[in-house]
Image (tube, rainbow, N blue to C red; front, side):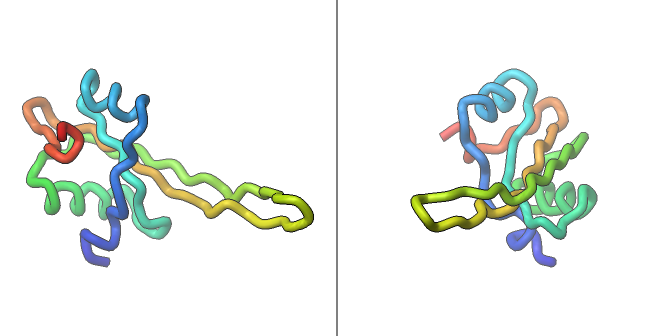
Length: 94
């Protein structure tokens, strides 16, 4: 897989922005098939930073209902990436 296929988008919420400011941790939505090693290489290649640690989490599809129709919210995979001291990703600072 290419690096651009592994990293889908950044997750920008209040909690993720606090992690970025205080602990130098950045949150991304990633491909469900990617492992920690692939995620680390993709982040380092795309943003020219040094990754220290990668934590991943996968959510299961959740059942939702609107009136008589039922369906599922999609399964999502997230990665919280810890960067080395002095490294920053500029898209979160904009």
